[in-house]
Length: 513
Image (cartoon, rainbow, N blue to C red):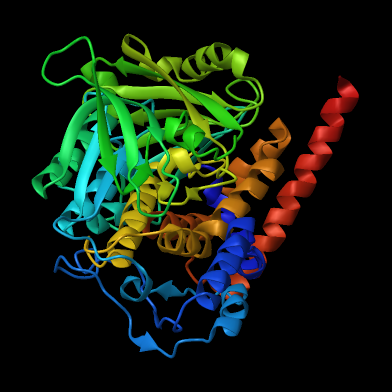
């Protein structure tokens, strides 16, 4: 959330980047699609599918929307169409095998928001689904902020939301405080959740639709040599109260890797490495009078003392606050930065008791490979955490659902075998929808987190009502909101002015040192 407060300026330019940002995976998909078409006996038909469930915020039924059929391009036209950004979904009925006597079987590895939403979508639509999660009471270190649109889109009940934050303080390196949230409507808020509560809810809902939830530790998988043989999942089963896992295997047709930043599924498909941050968080139970201060308020601290490339936070939960920070470039000093974050907030959290200490890696960018044959990565396993803000919950849930929708669509609700082209539909839609967001936040981090003067300029910009309105609208609803051209121009001028002042202050500081 932090750096998205000035993302509006850069998102205008990002529309052009979106069209030019075809990744290597898209080019590979084009080649794969072309080869598939050229070897088919008859050209398959295509249809558009926007990936939106009717049961989302915009409707109430529980099926999928499929767009109108369009004319099928011939094989020679397919690569050109893909390069122009069109989404082409091959109908499974033309070139995939009908499954006899059973439904498609999919293993979802990992039971966080990505895995829970993937398992729910699969099970709800007729796919035989197995969700494997070792730590069913897991509480990943996480600020726990979710955008308002996620509540409706994923039908989250109000009772799992601990706090509804309507005010936020941005606090600069020199402790200048800017109040953010003045432009929010009366029914708008940022939801604060505990991951152990959210994750359990999503897993239980998937189970209610028919998914089999296994308390197990994923070990490895045997990759098949052909397009129809099963993947063999090796795992340790910790059913009941067992402290010792029982070795077991499971045969499935496809796999969704939702097992986090240290994904073993990613290693098994040679998905490549990525840079990562270390997040460190302490849950602190405060006296009642201190907790009242954070009833609907969150705080973000920036400065070299709390992190050289991220921010420190104090986010309210049900009966405690989460105090944390993160860093990519100086991981060994994470405890030092955590101490500094506590010290910056010490007057407001004085008398608190630390009830839990948590640390976890957070990916900094998508992995080089996110699909391989009938395996897809989602959430942190795929690298879907935004730079600067560290937001990942919504994108995890969304990617899990989108990958599952691609499997449901490609298998015709579990009646046919899927292949890599089906899973690449998910990647194409994901990149088209979110590539610019990740790119812009990457740029903003480099601009505003490079020095304390730049951070002072950033906090100064956050005081602008127009910046707040455009940013909160974009954050809460995950859309780039059209702005007033004159106000956009004014914002651009102010941004440039702030950066010039920041550079001047930085030079003065360097000369003094």
